[in-house]
Length: 335
Ligand SMILES: [Fe+2]
Ligand SMILES: [Fe+2]
Image 1: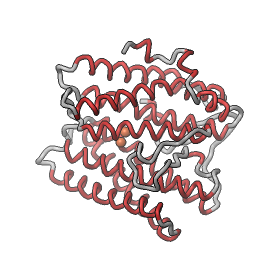
Image 2: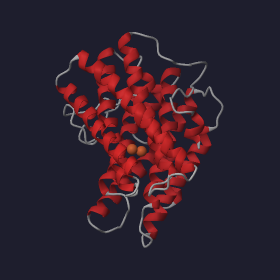
Image 3: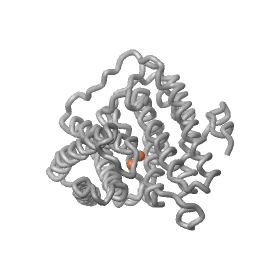
Image 4: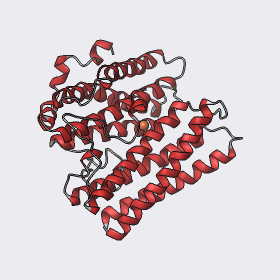
């Protein structure tokens, strides 16, 4: 695949759905802020994904390495083009940003699917297991789902996200909009966040258990505990989607915030130790920082859902145009 194909040329912007997205944010500062926040967050995460996959190929897999590298570079060029524009941004510029991102995100989703299939068939060698490559793909699917939701387009199938909640579609709502959707929608979206990101943090903990070194027993044991507790959390979220109980939802929300906060502290400590060379394991410091960004996604979604249920105003910071409102400091997302 050549770089020319990956660059968001004007023709790429004519994707199905791009006009719906532009119409959804036109003149709407809340929606365009939501799109800006999600796009800045996920482009950082997706650039990391392309590099994690690229760096995991066997040295004989030059073509796949270069394809992963081209995708990573294309994501980084787009990030550089839009990320440092001064806020507030006109909604039309936010729409252009998301429309330019969509072809890249689609290309990366297809690449992840292909790499996972090649690993399954033993046609390539890769340090990441195939299920973890599909884990990376599902995070891109979740992002596309949030853009589709606010564009009035279909949200992802439950099966696409590998969830056990009610069969059908998963309500993927941008975090910043959780305060303005109807209460029933906020509840459903909050449960979807808890199930999806609970499962993903379970898988993150499992990945770290693979990458830690045998003598790092304390860290391996801690990761094992987080894996078990996130599995319980996502099981509870899946069960609540079948039989809802408000007290149980409130208890799940409190537990999710505590567990995610503890996991985030563990990741920040690990990342600090990695940067100081006090911890050397078989994963880069970028991975511990990456997962820490993914803890902020879950924390913010749960906290905003709680505020919605309590009928409290959301922290907005909305001015004349779109502004970034995510929990992760913007400079981390831009790095
Ligand atoms: Fe990720
Ligand atoms: Fe992840």
